[in-house]
Amino acid sequence: MVKIAPSVLSADFTKLKEELDSIKEAGASWVHYDVMDGHFVPNISFGYSILNDISKVTDLFLDVHLMISQPRLYVDQFIKSGASLIVFHLEAMNNENDVKELIDYVHKQNVQVGVSIKPFTPVEALLPYLQDLDLVLVMSVEPGFGGQKFNPSALDKIEKLKNMKENQNYHYLIEVDGGINEETGLMCKEKGVDVLVAGSYIFNSDNYKEKIDSLK
Image (cartoon, rainbow, N blue to C red; front, top):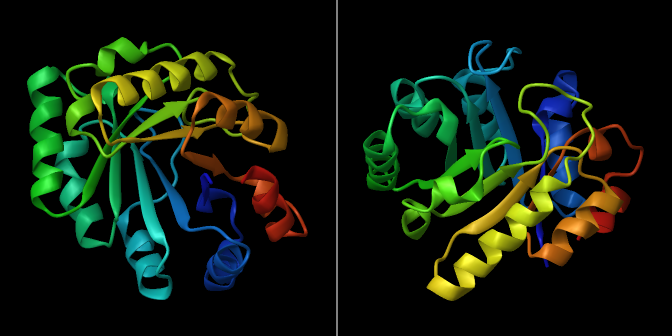
């Protein structure tokens, strides 16, 4: 069964602890935490202080997605604030050596690490790193904008990643984020996804359990 990671960006922040308790009770095991800096992506979300607050009131797995430039400069603060998993963008890095160094650094802090790719970045760009990753995040929309439609190119990427994982005996989970609902979630599951990120599909509904169950 896939893991469901509701994106807290869509939650009601006036009652955040209640929202976190509600998604846990509804069957979510992860929280997806989107960090946007207004530079790598056009929008701005929140930083590590709110993550620190969240980590104090929930025991859900904290999946921290850094949509930011120069993630190495900020990763320590997110680790200190309780991240269970740090996911940074391949496109935010200067070269292969920097990517490998950051993966190694996060692992040395006893935190899981993943790499994300945008819709127009090919899966093959991840080949030097797959053996060392805990997760690969496939973006099925352009990061930084809400309300976009699911890009079906993500399905081919999920399938390729699943085949590489099985053929090479890698251990990473495959996660997809963007435009996920019952229909697109099923398409991703058929290709071998492990984690589905969903925001408005869950938080804009009156029945979190019903929506989470529809994705499993």
